[in-house]
Image (cartoon, rainbow, N blue to C red):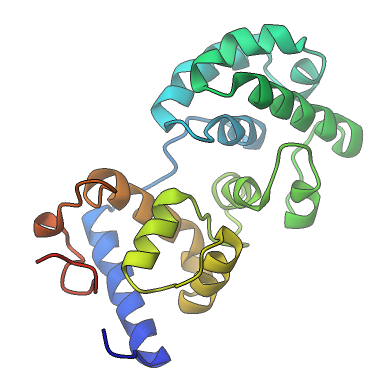
Length: 216
């Protein structure tokens, strides 16, 4: 692909966003949650597993531990039994209990609304903080970069970076702030439904005319 000007890339990014919005008007976070605490726990549990799997275990988890105080006082081995099917259950149990204890110790059990405060909590990195801010509080502080977002934006030629942090910076420059949260949902939905990592369905892709990696 010939070198693309910043103006052309920005225009192509805007067109891609519009096409994905038309394709997935209902795109949203597919983790089930009722508040920021539940979303934070579910996001931590979602690492290296599916949202479907997480949604299968969180009803029982939140029945037993309905808030930060209850989870902060939980025995790790008891939590492990509930979340075992999500994989890496020992580390995940440690992280969600740490998250709850951090909320109790530093925020009276409430989930903070800033990137700095969230990122300082045990078990919470920038990706999880972005998920919470964007979906629980409606704050566009950054772009969630998971495996789908990283893969699709690379295929689309929107970034050449390798780390999530640098990919995120590229996307924050390329897309308007008020699109950051929805952008991640659109890319994740498209990655799950059409642009499969092993068998991308380019012939069915609404972005095929804009994608330098398209096979059609």
